Length: 468
Image 1: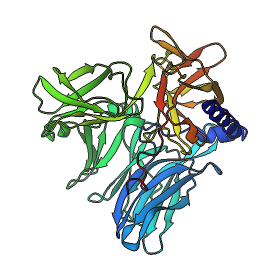
Image 2: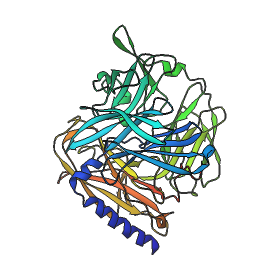
Image 3: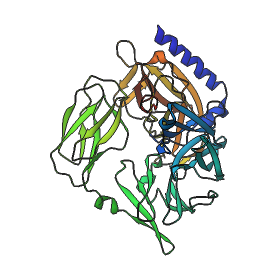
Image 4: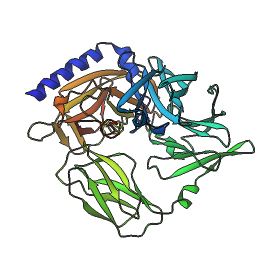
């Protein structure tokens, strides 16, 4: 009964969110389907222990940069929170320039289907325990989800997820933030940019340019400038692997069905790896090929467990488990990506947990979403007998929803990311498994994602107060 009382509270809270109207829902449409949706930087500076986290502000809809820290040397052992609201509806990335300066990139919605990018240079003041914006500016027509600064070449690289391209602008790393960027590469020549929300930018130590990693975070292309022209080195990544690495394209691993992994680097097969996760006995997995399907988890444990696959001589694959049912359907109408959420997942007291899906480019109509469509986010819970309310028919899975949250998608450019911020999660829901699915329709055709689920945990896995 307590569970259903909490679910009822969730319905009321969600209704309050929806009551703000379509404008607020449009603002919640995310630029960012990155599984590490919230940007986090762990810092040790001036005897401070803490991190910098981007969160959404439920009041204004604008994003908040939150500095959470302890200061044991000064006798401060409880977590102190300092907030700074930015003119963004979603932070795409936070780039650490030094121990006290950070460049924040994101997107602000300016109307149905329209937006502007934004950059803000933020300073932390360890003496006064404050934050301030040193410089900020809009970057028109750009949807930034990643940044990399090259101090050797004096360039700021930006990943524009909307147009699926890599951009660059000269910048000294201080002073006024840049507003004019030029294109270095796009999805027609760079495979990592086909699904840019899973790509990652990094600087290259001791050499100029930037490294653009694809979804498995192993393969990358080095982009660098010489003689006024940009070049792409696609071979450097393989030569730099001194030991084998186990990887996959997603952080979340389904515990109720097989999943694929890849091995890169100088590997010898067969390869014995330790498969370890919360709530289950460690097992040994033997790989015989560079790409292999792994059997599902043991029956024990809950979706959302943290685990790893690796050994002392092989780079680990770190993951979180989940449950998944079916495959995205309606590909001839609107191709859909997998349902997912940010890497923190649900836990008691959490505000603004983000669940996400994506509409992918169409095989015939390409990147153009010519007409507006409507959709719903479906939410349900595992029952007391341990059964998930899912109907499976071949590769198709449909959730029997307890909640159906409507939204509209304006015409625009694909891929289009969709995200929803959940109300505060009640502590009485701890231990419940919550399931999500997104459904789209134009009135005659339907498309829907797979069903994705996680257990609601009792606390934040990255809580500084329990792990100072």
